[in-house]
Image (cartoon, rainbow, N blue to C red; front, side):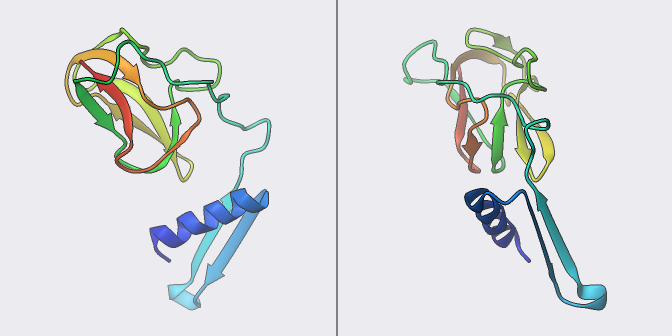
Amino acid sequence: MDLDEIRELIALAEASGLRELEIAEGTGKTKTRIRIVRATAEQSPPQVDAAPQSLAPRASGNIVAAPLSGTFYQAPAPGERPFVAVGDEVAEGSTLCIIESMKMMNKIAADRAGTVAEVLVRNGQPVETGAALFRLV
């Protein structure tokens, strides 16, 4: 089973409202088992914000792109302060956000120093690989 097939299974579970989905294929040593469990209200991630933040129009700057597909989160946990906000100075390697992919929390770091000019994605929004997340100036 490849990553695209797994993504399709996740989309199927979300679209159908299933709380849990388990698929097994093959036999013996070549058996593959995939189990997808959707978060319940007690486990749910932070609330989705109304709109992205912006300091200036999208003119120039360094775009930080998503290195993988998943769900974008601005804070380390629900109710906690975001890693960065518009106007914050960041150093190269500073954590900007988290992308949750397949129940793994992946910290996304700044690839260079700068000022956060724009947050291009809403908290809790799904993102694809290559999607623009931040603009640094």
